[in-house]
Image 1 (cartoon, rainbow, N blue to C red):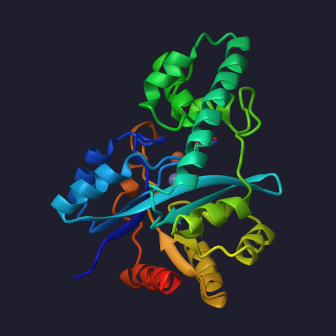
Image 2 (cartoon, rainbow, N blue to C red; image 1 turned 45 degrees about the vertical axis):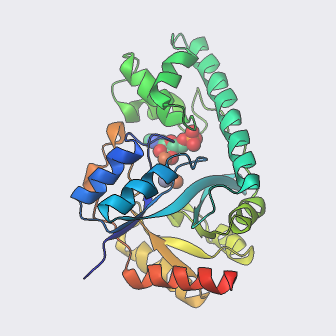
Length: 276
Ligand code: AMP
Ligand code: FE
Ligand code: FE
Ligand code: ZN
């Protein structure tokens, strides 16, 4: 059998539209055999997903997406096979979620000063106790009729350095890599299509385990290019749809960005060799 593997998905524990249960049922409909839930700064959806995955015969790999900062650019790192109970990890994640809340409040202040009458409860009601981010503010703006659609909210207010933008606190790439590996996981550079090669090299030198080669933001040339780098530096390859659902309108991506089974096997081999 040909396994259908998607290692990049979000739930409403971060900025996805669906709960773990809903996402697992969607995955089943798409005939996915292996998925990873990779919420931003949050692992709360994972145990429920693993449990239901067992019933639906879907392997759920514990995952996570962290935001780091290199040369003033935001770089996302994915962690796979992490121990979600790891204490250091838990400590970091609650710190970052708290910081995200303060940051959302600062962004709302900026919106208020632009005569947009929105408050933190409007945003929290979009967020389902999750790691609060710009997508939740965008949804609140949309719901209250301040923008024409989800992307309009970014274009007008929330985009990087936009009128209501506030930076997040970022963990350094070195600390993020250590956090992931200390929690027993493998680290990957997420959707590197927008990164300079020097940043990529910086992370490879810092000991990242692999690169997300397959991603909706990558064209065929980029897929080949990153696969070439993976092979050249003996790294691992990952990939997935980065599915969020809801306002993002990325339903078409589901089931289309699949990782080759041999690549997943290579990840597992690496994991065993690290723990052996
Ligand atoms: P945050 O982590 O709160 O800064 O939110 C980052 C998320 O916002 C990204 O993962 C995207 O989903 C979304 N995002 C950022 N910039 C844009 C943009 N210009 N257009 C649409 N979505 C965006
Ligand atoms: Fe996201
Ligand atoms: Fe990302
Ligand atoms: Zn993502």
